[in-house]
Length: 158
Image 1 (cartoon, one colour):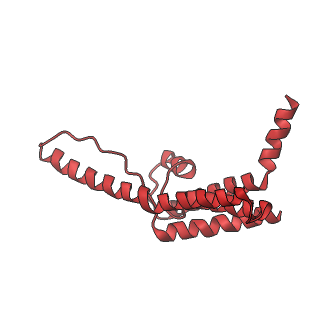
Image 2 (cartoon, helix red, strand yellow):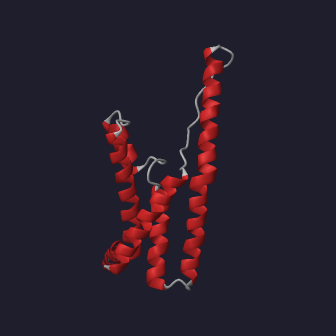
Image 3 (cartoon, one colour):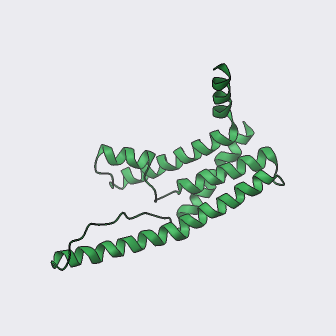
C-alpha cells in the first residue's frame, strides 16, 4: 500500500503532469473570468461548469494542455525522443480537432437547431435541440498554445 502512495505522490510531482493540469486549469480560469466580465454567466451552476468542464472560448484549454505536455516532454526527454514525437503528433490531432472538426460540428449543430426551432414554431414537426459543441477560432487556439508552452517551460525550469 505504501508504494501506491509513493507512486501517486511521484505522479503529482511530475513536471509533465503538473504543467498539463496547471495549463488546463489556468485556461479554464481565464475563460471563466472573461465570461464573468462580459456577463455571460447567469448562475453559479454555469460558473462551475465553465470553470471545470465547458469547452470552447478564449483560450483553448485543450490546446494549452497538449502544448504544455509536449513542451515538458521535449524539455525533459529531448526533442529527439520517441515520446516527444508522439506528444507532438497528439498535439497536432487535438489542435486540428479544436479548429476544424469540433468547430464545424458546432456550427452545423447551431444551424440545425435554428432550422428545427423554425419548423417547430410553424408546427411542421416536433423538435428537440441537439447539443452545440463549441470549437475554437484560430486566436483562441494560438493563445491556448502560448499559455501551454509558457507553463510547460515554467514547470520544466522548476
